[in-house]
Image (cartoon, rainbow, N blue to C red; front, side, top):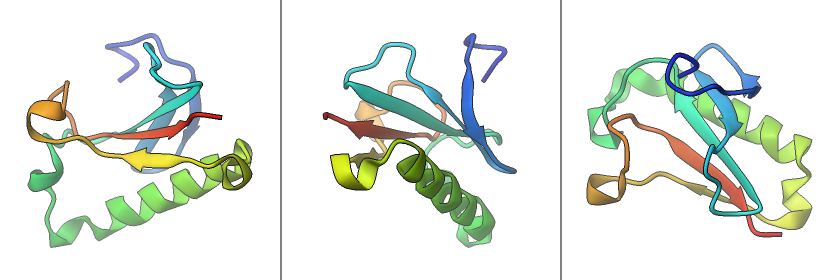
Length: 96
């Protein structure tokens, strides 16, 4: 993604990169994007268990880093017409 957007990486692991949303809709708005090209949720298969395990790892690290257990958070994946870019990704948001 760094070749598309000038991003400051918050965290990354083998499969994912996390960075602040360039046009945030919430006080805390982090994008989590897989390093591999994946069109959407429907493109995943049973062989992607490591990708999903790596997602849990990076989300838990962000929750700890930003103390989101106390503040509250949502992890969102959009699909179909709600997905604004043709790349599977998640939004980690907090309104507080």
